[in-house]
Image (cartoon, rainbow, N blue to C red):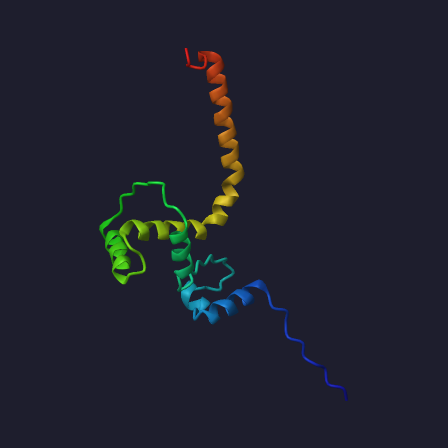
Length: 139
């Protein structure tokens, strides 16, 4: 009698992600509160180390000013990050977390990129027509 060798199932993307997160000490089910009822659950997991982002920020020039009003809790949290020594100021903490948040949501913005390009092209056409109607304004 010949025994069949059991072939493990092919590892999918979900399993690969789960293994990589486990190496970082993150349990996907705990971090995402996954429910299995045939529903797709979007999970955002931020790696426990911000070291790379802090280093990148230190190497890039921050010369753009963005004024932001935040609630009291957010302000306290930014202050707490400053107290840890991970960042030098509230401004640096805010810049770091804005950058991180934008990276997390980059795929959603990319889905809207075509529509944004169309809006910008329409604005350009409107400005050109306005110049035809009103002149270039340099007179």
